[in-house]
Length: 78
Picture 1 (tube, helix red, strand yellow):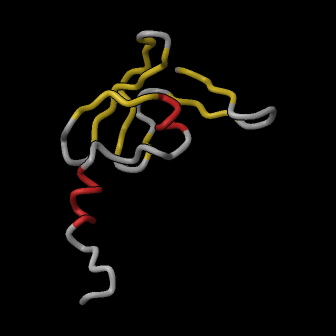
Picture 2 (tube, helix red, strand yellow; picture 1 turned 30 degrees about the vertical axis):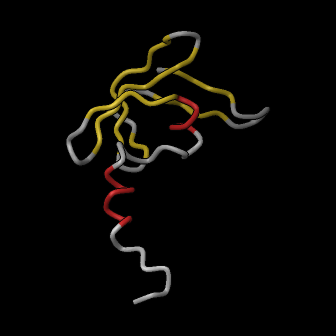
């Protein structure tokens, strides 16, 4: 389990099995001075992401979400 203090009163706890969007955290580890999380996506892909991006909601999938929504954008030209 890894606890990260976001501000004076809020904490984000990342532990195995916790879900973040389409990702499920499997293991938290330190590499090269930064904390990373090994995650499994709902599509079946496993990736390593930066802890801060996961904890602050900037990473929600392995990239499959972007590929799925890319084809649905029409920019008003439907």
